[in-house]
Image (cartoon, rainbow, N blue to C red):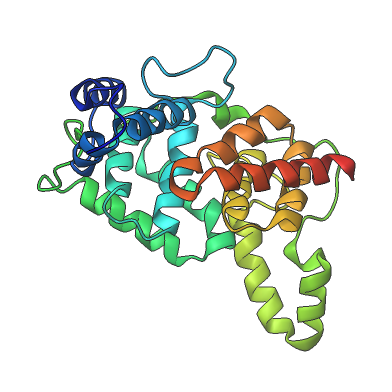
Length: 271
């Protein structure tokens, strides 16, 4: 018999579904056995993913931005079951496929470009009427992109400088050994993270860094995360936005990711 008897499973699930809009079937089993655990999941996930009645007035990142970060991280973990549900949530927020793919490109330098293919698979599954989780808007992908604040953020760098991957010590070392490898890899990374400033993307360099930073913290890469945090700051992103971006991957990577992120932020701010 479970010792967690303070909460009724039915009440926990009713709140969860009302706030999130839908829920996966396994949470019903979890709630019957460990209702207090699931309720804490509800409260924490609701806060970092911007669920109804779980937000706070001082949070800075928008719901669409949080969902983009979460969807990319799910696809990076090859979670082809949960990710389409998040694509549908993005659709309901007015986010189109082009923007989802730009977010996927932002995480690809950290976790590999196969993640972009997993994002494509999530989009295909989300548009399949047979996929049972979450409501698909009429017509699928939004015809027009709904503007949210991050589309205008992180587009101007405070100071000039060469941002190419080829300028890092590690890739200069690689270039001495295999210059063609270095050139081709750098071209991909520089394209994905918009090295040198905005060209035509919907997501500017600073906002793309939020996605990359969360992925680096999920991988435990404090030093590299600190480098990317400094770049995010250079493009005008602030520490609250960076921390909120990292927290968006807490549900699928654990609270340790946020702790790693805090170390990276402290290191970036000491430099």
